[in-house]
Image (cartoon, rainbow, N blue to C red; front, side, top):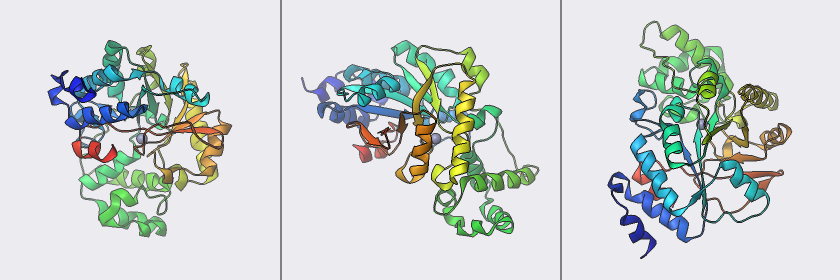
Length: 327
Ligand SMILES: [Zn+2]
């Protein structure tokens, strides 16, 4: 029986996109390992700011993707994967699971599934969101959804001409382009603008991210935590001092959780343009052994830069077009 027919014979996975099974098959037959990256688990996250994008995977689909993965890969913890890579041991047939951004649904929805399937996972937290602050990308989404982009840019340019580099019709992407904008500056302008506008426009500050109390009261052998920075700014858009501050604040906040913290740092946005050599030096300084990216490439071998392991991850979303792009 071929691997494809073996997978197909295991249907009722009929609600899974065909792409996922084919993709797993291709990885496994090529003797590769894989690190998967998820975000929120829920029915469209029930949150208007994040619904309908790559952040959501319904719990049932998450359960079935992991069940399928477990049939063909041995799922180990991310830190175990890193330790094998460090020692140049084979990672063939191994998989690890990660979550970025620290959505509350990882604890409420994903954790029981991980425990049920006995699959370990690492959740990378944005420590600023411990304080019930809104994620700055959610603020960007709010400005777009309220049709306030032009008004926001007028407001921001009056404070700082640097905002002239942001094109209103490319606001979502330009606002996270390290060549155009310092993320900290963008976040501060969004805060000032939203403080004024929320008197007129509907603004929900519903809590959707993990906080220390929830993390501590839901300890699990199958879920540990790691660093995804303090503010989820684009590190390469910041000055070296601002980057150091991001690392120091987040590392200290995670220590307060009194839990084993992953030696892996998950880079916000996870692309090659989102960090620089200053970032890598700081990772070493703060004791991290590996940095995780999300540029959709397979784990091939220990890819070492500045004495750190660089680890690629793939996003198995429900979107078929996406899956077909990354095989
Ligand atoms: Zn992220």
